[in-house]
Length: 168
Image 1 (cartoon, rainbow, N blue to C red):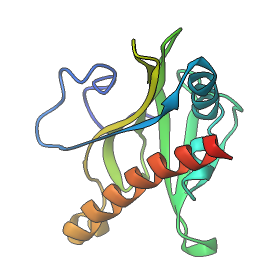
Image 2 (tube, rainbow, N blue to C red):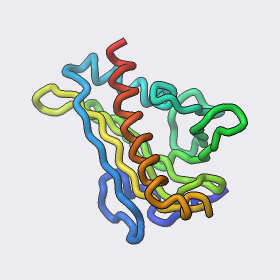
Image 3 (tube, one colour):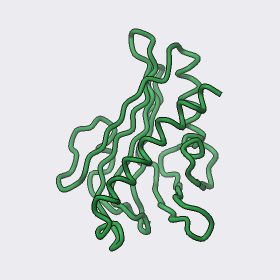
């Protein structure tokens, strides 16, 4: 299955973002120190951010790696809408961990989303979600402002969910 958009990897450094997409970026401080950074990176690495955000998720791989497919789901039971994606990049450095997922056929949007934690020079740990997307189905096109509000809501859930997970 192929990605449903051009510009794979553009969320890695935010350059070369394709025209015609909506851009979203949320950044939040998680805490301080190497221990906090390591815990946040491990939560991202093992898909736990999705569960912490209240989303369903399924993947054949227990850990993030380039080429691994993942589906996230919003809703409950038979009303859950699944959104298939593929990991298109991973960065794993001493002070930076993250990855980007690109949409596959069947996803209600077309684009890419990145999740990244960093440890800055002042020992602060930051979590950032970056995305570019546009509607890929009739219902997301018709949804207009509701679709955009749902994307913003999910993005905020990632931030709150990871913060809660790390405090627990």
